[in-house]
Length: 252
Ligand SMILES: NC(=O)c1ccc[n+]([C@@H]2O[C@H](COP(=O)([O-])OP(=O)(O)OC[C@H]3O[C@@H](n4cnc5c(N)ncnc54)[C@H](OP(=O)(O)O)[C@@H]3O)[C@@H](O)[C@H]2O)c1
Image (cartoon, rainbow, N blue to C red):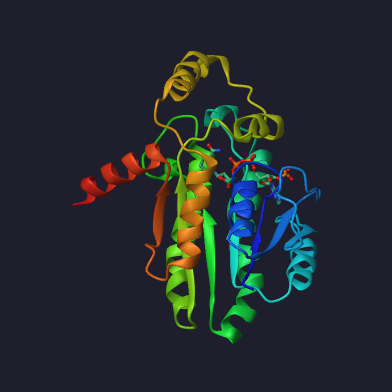
C-alpha cells in the first residue's frame, strides 16, 4: 500500500487531501500541531502524528515515526493580509518559518530515504498569489514565491534519483478557515493611512465569483503524486486556472 505524509491536516486543504488519498486506498500519515481525527474519515489506514514544521526535533520525530514514504505534501501554511507597514517583522519571520523554511526542512528530512529507494514525490502547496502582484500580500506572496523557486531548482537535483518535486497553486478558497486562522495568528491591524485601500481590496477579494474548492486542491495533489507526467506547476481552482493562463500568455 503506498504511503503519504501530509502536513497541516487539522483543517482546510490538508483534510481534503488526506480524505482523497484515504478514499483511493493509500496509507495516510496526517500530521498537525495538535493531533485530532476531527474532520478526517475514520480508517485503519489513517495515522495521526504531531508535527510542527518550524521545530527541527518535531520534524525528525515525525519523519522517523512515519516510516518509508512514497509521497510528502507540504501543505501547512499561514496567511497574512496587511500593508507592509502594518506587519510586524516577528510575524513575517514566523510566516517564512512555516510557509517556506518548514517545507524546505521537511523536504530535506524525507529526501535521504527517497533518494535511497530511488522513488518518491514531494508536492509543495504554494498559491496563485505568486502569479500576479497583489496589494496587502507582499510578505505572504514572497514566502510562496520563495517556495516556487526552491521547488523548481530542487526538482532538478531530485530527478537525478528518481524523485519528483512539484507545485500546486490554489486560488482563493473562502470555504477554508485560512483567512480566520491568518488573522488570529498574524493580526490585522492595518495602519490608518492604508485602511481605505486595504478595505477596498478586501471587498474585491470577497466579491470574486470564481473561487477554489478544497476538492480542486485535492485533485491537483492527487494528479501531482500519481501522474509521472504531471506538470511541475499546477493551478488548482477556477480562479487560479484563469490567472495561470494569463501568466502563461504574458510570458509568450
Ligand atoms: N485558503 C486559501 O485561500 C489558500 C489559497 C492559496 C494557498 N493556500 C495555502 O494552502 C495551504 C493550506 O491552507 P488552508 O486553506 O487549508 O488553511 P488552514 O485551514 O488555515 O490550514 C492550514 C494548516 O496549516 C497548519 N499549520 C500552520 N502552521 C503550522 C506549523 N508551524 N506546523 C504544522 N502545521 C501548521 C494548520 O494547523 P494548526 O491547526 O496547527 O494551526 C492547518 O492545519 C497553506 O499552505 C496556504 O498558504 C490557501
